[in-house]
Length: 474
Image 1 (cartoon, helix red, strand yellow):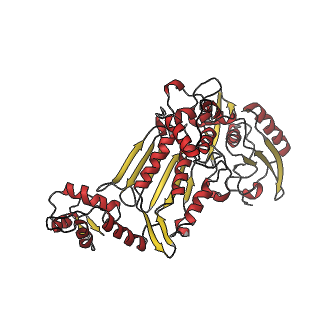
Image 2 (image 1 turned 120 degrees about the vertical axis):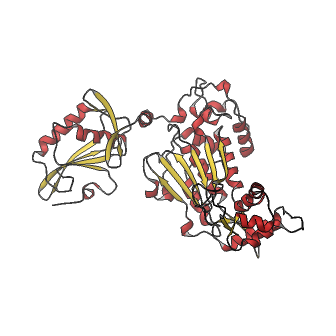
Image 3 (image 1 turned 90 degrees about the vertical axis):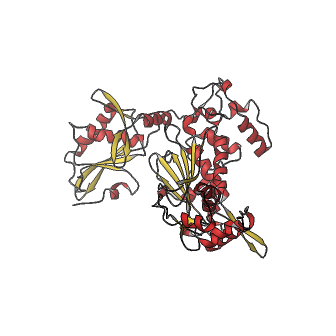
């Protein structure tokens, strides 16, 4: 008879099924014990096939004793486990609950090797070098940002950190704060947190790449990117530069009411700040060759950071308003709290959701998205004003009224001419001919790019970038 193993162990528990206790192939189940202890825990079940058929174990008591003794000799350190029996359809099963360990890594010892395993999907695989380092830090109750760096404190400057602290709190940064904040250890050695916060951070993979793409995706075409920057330096600089990049590539419309006016930003300021802060302080700095990316499109903004949730859970499966705070880089998080950039209580997800729900154009479809994998985290903000007719009209009026107008030799307003002409889709060449432009480069630089940035014109055939008949409309 078939059955769902989750009925034995609970919906949220990882498990591995074994038909029988393979005494001559113990590695097949010992690596699962290592992986469960190094990851999030799980349960091994003996007496059930891969097709979920319950076959039972004939010598359950003897096999259970063998399992216990083998774990003691083949797993180092000894994990916390619970061995139990379960009757199903008059057949006896052996269940071994393996709990997430605190003294990681837990190694399988055999065949002349010591190998730490982790869970990847429904498989137990050897931990790579970075994951092994992470397990060692976890087992010694340390974090990357607390480790001593290879750099010298006397070669670093912290003027940005000191000035922002003064500006945001009104307090002076004292020399004794270097140690109390965790920038230096008790012997005066610079920590990784200190190296990341220095004005000219020597940790190159802490960079942030920002791009404002032209359209709804990264497809190659005419003017792939409207704006792009690569930022390096200390984390405070990275935060400020990234926020400025987003600000200059977004619009904040408004409308009048009987009591004043209502502002209608593309993205709430609080959400942007919180999202970038989280990307910088919670990213996995052990992941070399991977940086934070901020990608802006017409309809959304995506923030990517290396490293999944610190506890290995999948954020898309969690109640976002009740996620417990587990900080991968506690020193950096504490410093950002001291700078008034974040809340110590770990309420970032809730803050982002709340900032969206209070906006004029918010609907459930506009709800921010949070996604994580084993080594990746994505935060996706929807552009609240994308496709809103009242916003498009307001932006067009604001652009015509407030931006510098270009006049042709007859005194005509070139911006308005282009907008009026492009009520129906027109090609670049058609626009240039109608308005009397001679230089394609000048037209793109002085008119087209700016009008695309302001969403006054849109490309309607982005998949044919080289065509002389590329179409636009206003």
